[in-house]
Amino acid sequence: MNTILIVDDEYLIADILGFALEDEGFLVEKASNGRKALDALKEKRVELVITDYMMPVLNGEELVMAIRKELELADLPVILMSGAQASQGRPELFAAVFEKPFDMDQMISKVRELLNM
Image (cartoon, rainbow, N blue to C red; front, side, top):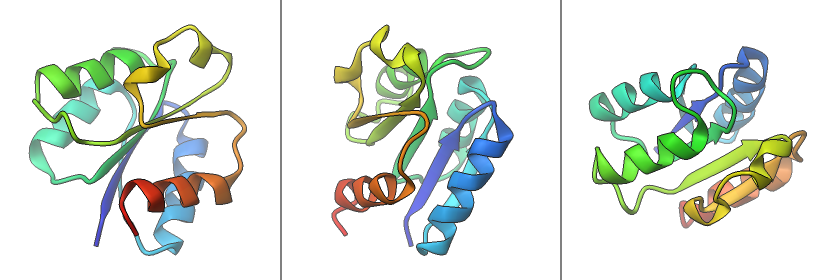
């Protein structure tokens, strides 16, 4: 069973996305900011990360860069979900970018694609 880490400081969004992914058979872990996400990635095996852009401590771009450099997880797919800030960052760092609000079916389809399901 694939484990997905959702990183968002907005608990409602993380919960709704988490419930939808669990309904599809995924295990879900959650973190409320980038630093907590890095800590979780050190402790647990995760196949995919879905992160917000605007968060305290580390934003989504800083998180994906730390995943690549600090944790040396070059192949871990990371999806960015964001509002208008997505265009400010570097979308090439991410496997996919979804603007909030996003279509849940499209998100689940992209997750399945990235996990080769």
